[in-house]
Image (tube, rainbow, N blue to C red; front, side, top):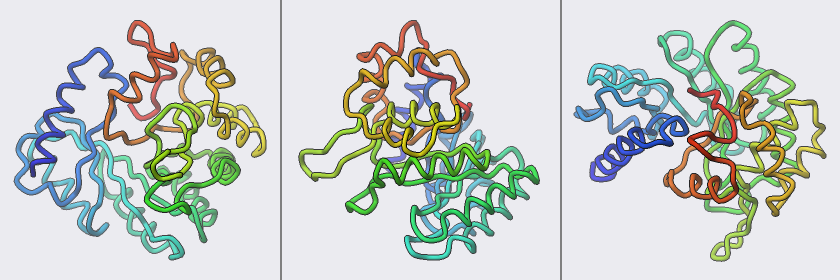
Length: 266
């Protein structure tokens, strides 16, 4: 529980800071819900680190402890597996839980488009379920190319789906990690790419934005839309909040407490 304790303390500090509106809910593993009284009044997102079936119990325990549980996030399948069974279990949760957004982490592999169709159909029925994608990890195949990620963003756009991303988004700009050799997507790239897609951009145009490694083609489009509602992309999980915040300040995209867009997740 040491890691959880440290995260709780740090998150409360972030909530009291001037940049608090930029910080989302605290990501909390479902298995840490037992005996966790320090979450009172904290906005929490429960992440399944065991089974989807255990999520409703974890949510109930945290809410009983006074936490403001706003969302759950769950992997629906491993790469190469059919995502539909896991997605079906999450749809049941989305239909039964109150005041809860559900993020289904769908692998960027076989069955992706059919899974997006399922999520889109559920959204038309009023279910609060949304896709989530992992764009990094410990192997090269877990990092989609700019074209692959652009296709996913446009597929979400075509279905009217906002989405969340996880892993690999530590820095604002696309870059290659000198230690691993993996090329990571930049969160500023994704922000501008989502805006271009929302405005009707084709896959090739969106991919060009995702592939940019210089701030010049990204900063001005982000600044021009700074006071607009952020389209499509809800946000991403960050282990270190201050790192991306510092980069946004250096790029001139945060001033007087304002950021490069209003979050759709608040």
